[in-house]
Image (cartoon, rainbow, N blue to C red):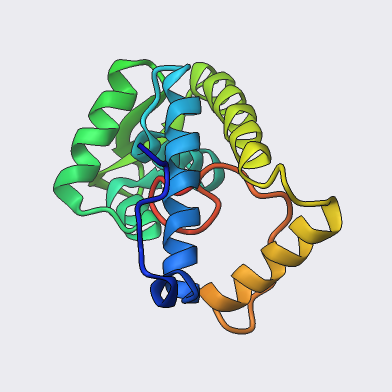
Length: 164
């Protein structure tokens, strides 16, 4: 079965269709790469956000990555059970939990970022470095008019939970 499903030529010529197919392929490649480390895309996105923002409240973490609070609790529970984050009462407001990345979490994050980078390299393997840079600039403008790419693309860097 072909990787790309059949679509009429008119549909295949639409940017939205092409972007959707590219995104689906990218998500598949990144998900497969992260699975090598036993990590799911949503968990990687949350771990990455904790590493960047932490210590951070669960509520703020959920807002930053666009995850429903109930789902965030489950993801943080999983990450904590794996020893990748710690969750302690926030010293400023003991009703809230502050989530912080652990040393093991930093190590796993470095590894999953490498895997995500390799998956993204595979996704864009048919492009020259200049074409990849141009693609990133154009996609940034499509996603957020006026935006510029924020450096090398890695897993979850598109601002979408678990994106890669």
